[in-house]
Amino acid sequence: MKTIFKSAVAVFILVSTLLPVQFVPEADAILGFWRRNVRRAVIIGGAAAMTTAAVAQQQAATAQQQAATAQQQAAAQQQSAASEKPLPLGTVVTSLPGGCSSTPVGGVEYYYCGGNFYRAVFQGNKLVYVTAQPK
Amino acid sequence: MSPLNFRRAALLFLAAVVALSITVSPKVRAQAPAVDPAATQILQRMTGYLGGVQQFSAHTQNTYEDLLASGHKVDFDVLADVTVSRPDKLFAERSGDLVEQTFYYDGKTLTLYDPSQKVYATEHAPGTIEGMLDFARESLGLVIPVADLIYRNNYQLLMQDVNLAVVVGKAMIGGVKCDHLLFSRPGVDFQVWVAESGNPLPYKYVVTDTSAPALLSVSTVISDWNVAPAVADDRFTFVPPEGVKQITFMPVKAGGGTSR
Image (cartoon, rainbow over all chains, first blue to last red; front, top):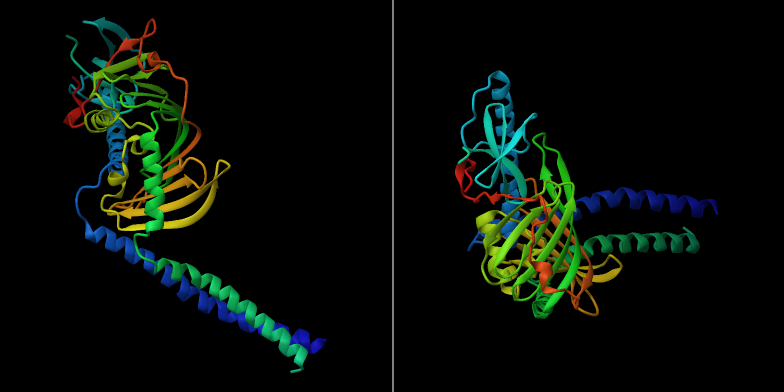
């Protein structure tokens, strides 16, 4: 019984030490196939991909847009904190500064605060505020 | 070594071989043709079926991955209920941490309504769902839930430049047994889970942007399919409630954020 156990342990140790060595190259081979394949797919290129590609690209664009908007907003906040200087027309902010008063001009609602007039617009699916001249 | 010991050792060795062969089999499967007809046939069956359904409604759970400036990946979840009436009507209601919006399209105009901020914007739109979806995406930057799957006869569109199509396996999505498909084209990987039996409807859809190292995905889990919903036509036309203000869309390619 003891020898059975001993030999079983020996085989187990042998197998378990061998396995990682075996597994790793296999895993690499599998991953390697996928990597190569993806790279090849990218290299092949071709006509502009529709729909799904557009969605993915748009998502990236939206993320960039959001980042840009956030930066603009930060810049706008710094600027308005430094002075009450009006922002350039068309500056986009994701939320209105505090203490705005709203006035309808020509059927459009304008929000006045910090020396700027803002109006609400949809930038894609996102509601943002843009500095504008009431008319 | 006694015969018994030998048998035990042989059994263990056999187990090791079996374990190895299991790990090897994906490699063998991966060497199958890059575009597997079994995968494209299922996709074609799904798109053909959905393109032929005159009216349908479904509930979608969209997860948009985004990358923070710090380099961490975060998910934004948006729920949407979509109702489509071909060829020219669509209604979508979204709620979640990103947006709370209702979208109307009645064949003439499209409207985006934000009930929490009490604002809406309306634009003239092309006369078909397909034309409207293109217009909304390209001119207004609007993303409509599962737009890719709403396109009629979108098989060619989805298969364009595809150089890898495989049946990954089976999976249960929302209690429905599905075939799990993977497709790849330059810059984009997409996965679709299609009901294995009954109507070949999609229950999950994942699009991954492979053009950037972040590999961001948009995932959509679709449930509550109804291919014969009772919908009145006025569902697709927006009537502004009292106190709601009209605003505009910012055109997509306007640099500097000017509005019209």
